[in-house]
Structures are given as structure tokens and as C-alpha cells.
Length: 164
Image (cartoon, rainbow, N blue to C red; front, top):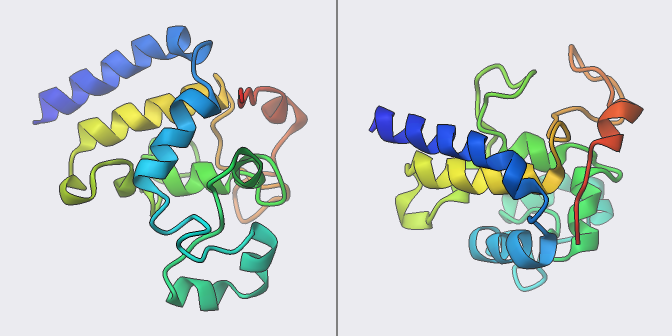
């Protein structure tokens, strides 16, 4: 199993630069979000906008719904809008700087629900998302410094590609 995971991650890392130019929201990201995330992050699930979510996070967490991410505009709020980096922090595999080796709380949902422990599938889907964000654009920073995590820099924002 470890060799399989290593091979999947290695292949994804090699393919990432070539893949980056071809990954778009419409073709790659939207179908993935619909398949893996819509159950808790869509209008049908009763999800709030990011602004509404911030007003009453505890309520929505109890209801087990997160902020909307079912349109390009909603997703941008989680990537580089008022909640910069939230998307990356939640879906990170734990290997990014400042992750401390701990995967984000939503990483396990990048796989089929009945197969949440399929690390190869999660890693492959994460590679697609990282390619969409852009080489060097995947970061866990927020707009302002929090603890030992520095604020997002202009250079980091300039690396975001986010092709529609």
C-alpha cells in the first residue's frame, strides 16, 4: 500500500506542471466538487454564503453544512476572497508548510465516501486541485497573520491561476 501511495504521489508530482495548463474550473474542479462536496456545500444542502457562514459558524457546523462552494464565484471566496486559504487549509494533505503534518479536516472527502481511506484517490484529486490553483499558489495563509502563519503575500496571490 505504501508503495502504491508513493507511486501515485510521485506520478502526480511529475504530471502536475504539464497538467496545470489544462486544468479548469468548468472541466475539472466543478465536477469534482459536485461529486465529493455538494452533499454539504451546496444550495441543495442548505449551505450559506461565506458571509452568512461567518455570522453563525456554530449553527452551520451543528447542521453539518459548510459555506457554498458550488459555483466559481463561491469557491473564489474560499481561495482568494474574504476567506483566503480556507479551501487549501481544509483540503490539504498535511504536507504543506504550516500544516504540521496534519491533513485538513476535509482531505478525506476527496475520495469516494465508501472508500475514505483511499489515499491514492485523494492524492490524485488533490493534485488536480493544486494544478488548478497554480504552481506555487497552494498555501495555507490567510489575509492576516494568525499564530505562526504569516499573512498571504502579494507574490503568493500572484501565483494563483484559477482558470474558469
